[in-house]
Amino acid sequence: SDPTQGFNEYEFPLDSNWEIPRQQLVLGSILGEGAFGRVVMAEADGLPRSPPSSNNGMGTIVAVKMVKEEHTDADMASLVREMEVMKMIGKHINIINLLGCCSQSGPLWVIVEYAPHGNLKDFLKQNRPGQLQRRSDSDGYLDDKSMQPQQQLGEKELTMFAFQIARGMEYLASRRCIHRDLAARNVLVSEGYVMKIADFGLARDIQDTDYYRKNTNGRLPIKWMAPESLQEKFYDSQSDVWSYGVLLWEIMTYGEQPYPNIMSAEELYSYLITGQRMEKPPKCSLNIYVVMRQCWHFESCARPTFAELVESFDGILQQAS
Ligand code: ACK
Image (cartoon, rainbow, N blue to C red; front, side, top):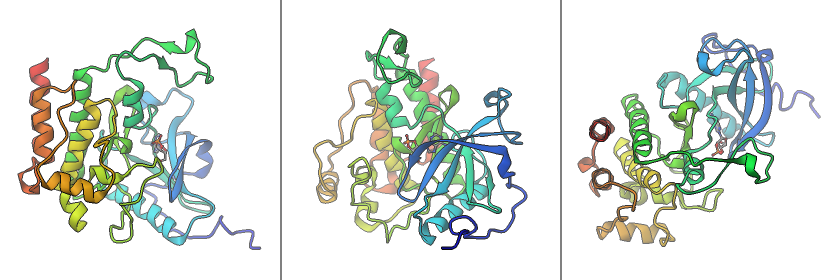
């Protein structure tokens, strides 16, 4: 067999704005695997764009996206497209930013910011009030040392999370980027509990993707979809606003599963078209529930824009302080 298989399988044009010498990266453990690829933690030396706070003289911790050994050409095309979308969109504090890439003589590595606290859904579940926390660096055993006092995730913090995600989405929408899968599982929690929207550059081929199939957690992503996406596979920034409303509900319930009794897309659509919506979560203030309900207007033009959502949360946060 060809020894270069899976090594120099593809050739990419050199983009000197983003290319980083491969020797500057030391790959570590696998953070996760998706359908198309893999995300690996790595330590990087001398990244020009690394924030000083994350560089303690030992190199910057980054996340590296790559395809798996058993990938198809379509998987590789999707990763390249994701990288190109990230280059085009530019930087914002509330999105996972591209740091660089290794594209020459070897496998394609797309280097992005690392978010140490993982995805928002699990983060919320781990920080439910009145729950003993297990430190992420513990050895897997629950003992006194691995318990930490309850972190204060109150309404103020949750509202701040919602505000930051609205800002990230406002930026993406201003760059003409439609996310199509906005949910707490696709928001990552960075240092200082900064919210960062992930996977916004993923090519989602709406015709080919079977959104009605369960994801890896056995859950239906349809529960985040706007009625027009369910019915006509139509997506725009206003359908992202609907999903943002469901994400807001996830935040205010500390990561509960939306519509627990709904089992299919047909059932969900008839629930929504008859005007039914999820109730106000117990810990959610009325003004935030009003915003949630505005995001769930059946008519997409009646929903607020992300710019208006940023304004609303700005006001809510000022009232609270
Ligand atoms: O949801 P997770 O725990 O967080 O599992 C997925 C997995 O890798 C596959 O996407 C995690 N992941 C992805 N990007 C990053 C990142 N930049 N920082 C930390 N974890 C990440 C993600």
